[in-house]
Amino acid sequence: MRETIYNSLDPSFKTPFGAVPEGTQVTFRLSVPDTLGCTTPYLCICRWDEPVRLLAMQPAGKQGGRDLFRLEYTAGQPGAYFYFFDLYVNYTKIFRGERGEGYLSSAPQGDRYQLTVYERDFATPAPLRGGVLYQIFPDRFCEGTPHTEMPFADRYYRKNKDGEPYFWPNEVDDGLLNLDYFGGDFAGIESKLPYLASLGVTLIYLNPIFEAHSNHRYNTADYMKPDPLLGTEADFVRLCAKAKAQGIRIILDGVFSHTGSDSVYFDREARYGSNGAYHNPNSPYRCWYDFSPQYRDGYRSWWGFDTLPEVNEHEPSFQKFICGEGGVIDHWMTLGASGFRLDVADELPDSFIQLIRAAVKRHGEDKLLIGEVWEDATNKVSYGVHRAYLLGGGLDTVMNYPFRDAIIRFLRAGNAAALAEVLMSIVEHYPKPAMDVAMNMLSTHDTVRAITAIAGEDCEGHDRYWQSGRVLDEPHFFFGKRLMRLGFCLIFTLPGLPCIYYGDEIAMQGYKDPFNRAYFDWNCTDETLRRCVRELAARRRANPAFADGDLRILRAEGGLLVFERRSGSHSATVAVNRSQAPVTLTLAGAQHTLPEYSYLLLDAPAGL
Image (cartoon, rainbow, N blue to C red; front, side):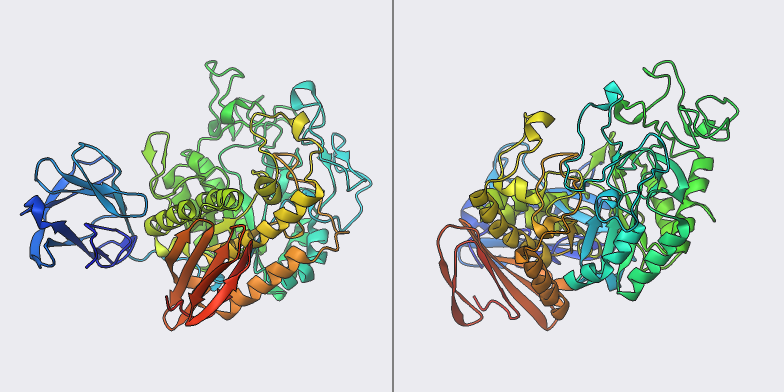
C-alpha cells in the first residue's frame, strides 16, 4: 500500500468510487503511520447541516509500519454528505487535499470530503449517451424565409447579416438593444439539418422559441405559441419530424421563473387586451405575481428588471398551466420536442422542478431535462436551501459550467493539474446517470465566445464600447484555433455530452452579450475546426467507452493531461498537450511523440 493515509479517488481507500445510490455499502479504509499511536479513528459524517455522526473504524491489521482501519458504511437517504476523519490523537484530523488525498491537521476545520447519495432508481436517457449536442440561438442561426416584414411594428429587421448585433442605445433610452432581428427561423434550421448531421449532431438545444418581444425571447409573451418570426406551429412540427429523420432530437428552453411584462399574462404594455394581471385585479393570472408597494415598480421582478415580472412557482394554477395535463410541457412535447432545458434553475423550487420532470417523463423515459446551474450542482445552496437537483427526482443533468471554466483556464494557461482537480471533483460528486449526459461546452449564449475567451484579451472591467468590434489579429486567431481543437477534444472525450454553441465550429468570435450572438457566417469555408468536430464525433460513436466509461487521470503535469475512459471491455486513452514543446510518452505499449498544442486518441488502455 502506498504511503497515503486516505484518498477518496483511490479504490484502495474508498469503494465504490464517487456518488452512490441509497442503500449502497461504502467501504472506507485508512492507512495511518503507527508512530501516531492511533487505535480508534472515527469517520465524522453529516448530511448538509445535520449534526455530525462519529462512526468508529475497525482495526484491519498492520502493514509496513502503518496501522490499517476499515469501516463499512451504508448510504442513507439521498443528499450530499460531508465527512472527514478524526484520529483522536492530539486533535489530529484528516481533511481533503486538492487531488482527493488526505492530509493531517490539528485545526478544528478543513476541507471535507463529499459523498453524494442519490435515489436508487435514478436513471437518465440511455439513447442520448455518446451523442453530440448543438446549441442554437434561433434568431441568429439561419434565415430560411426572407422576413422583409416584421410580425410586430416594434422589431427592427437586420437585412445585413454581417452586421454586429446592436448594443446601443440601451433599453433605458428606449433604444434597439434586443429589438434587432436577423430573421433566423424554423425553416432555416430545417434547411441546415444535413449540415448538423454531418457534424455528428444528435441533439439540438434551442434557446427560447415562444412568442416574446425581444430577440433573445427570455421575456415570454405566450407559452403556447411559437414566435411568429420563427414560423408556425406546423413549421415546428415539421422541423421536429425532419430532425428525427436525421437522427436528431430537439429540446427547448423553458423559462418558467418569470414572464415578460409585455405578455398575455401580465400585459403591462396593453398589447393583448384586458385580461393581463398588471391592469386587471380580477385577471386569472393575477395570483401568479406578487404585487406590493415594497417593490420599486409595484411588483416583484427578476433581478429588478421591470420587464421581467417574477411568477410564484408555488401557485397551483401556474403549476397546472406549466405541468398539468395539456399544459405547456405537454403541448410542446406532443408537437415533437424531446425535452427541456430549464432557465435559471436556481430560481425554481425543487418541488416545481419535480413536477416539470414528471410532465417531461410522461412522454417517455428517453426525454431529457437539463438545468442551468453554474456551480457544482450536488452541493449548490440557493436562497438558503440545499438543492436536490441531481438526486433522482429533479433534473436529469445540468449545464457543466465547472468543466467549461476549467477547460478555458487550461487552454489559456496550460495548468493540467488544476484542470484534473476540477474534472475529478465533479465526476466524484455527480451521480453517474447525471454525469453521463452532462452538457459539456466551451461557450454558450451567456459566455464570451470560446476562441475569444481562449486567445483574446480579458474583457472584465471593460464596457460594451470596448468589446464592440474587437477581434483577434491573425496570429492570435490562428493560435486560438489550435487551442480550440484541444478544447473540442476534451469535451468530446470527457464524461458527458459535448455541446457545440452554434458557430464555434467555424471559430466565430465575440465578447459578452450581445456580441456572442452574431449571425452564423454561412460564407465561411474554413474546415479546420469542422473537420476536427467530425473526426471526434466519429471516434465518439465508434467507442462505447466515451458514452458511459469511467474516468481515470493518468498524468497531469505542466501542460500535459493524459486520461483513460473505460466501460467493460471498451477503453480509450486520451492525451492532450497544451505545452509549447513536443512530449514523448509511452501509451498502450508504444512510444508516441505528441507535438505541441495537439492531442492523441487511442482506442486502447494506456498501459502505463
